[in-house]
Image (cartoon, rainbow, N blue to C red):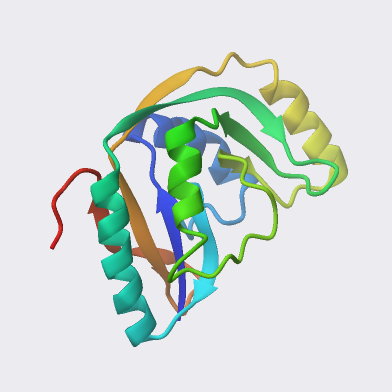
Length: 172
């Protein structure tokens, strides 16, 4: 089965992001707005149980922290993806790195760029128009992160929560 690990931002941030995603992101119906901590990976039931134990230990190590979402950016020319840039603070980097080692294989294809996707898989002309208008928008959010989610992919391609891990909570 395919799994992934993400942070879901607060509802106000998700609502703002979804106002664009419903028009410009073909994955809009498959997964809510999120920050990817661990790209999709395959695991069987035994492996995922070991990973859940490891994720509980990781969650115990962290306290809630604030993130700043501060501008619209893009992955062009690699892809025509437009996103909200999340400031790469140390806690976020540390959390991401812990999920690339130990029981977790490092399946990271690109450098870690914390972000929330607004639009993807756009034609070149549509990309230019959408990015041009979005980058003029003043985007400023502060959000508190106090948990992350292990997701799994359903047969229809959508993602759903397998388990939520709250920071600083004493898991045993």
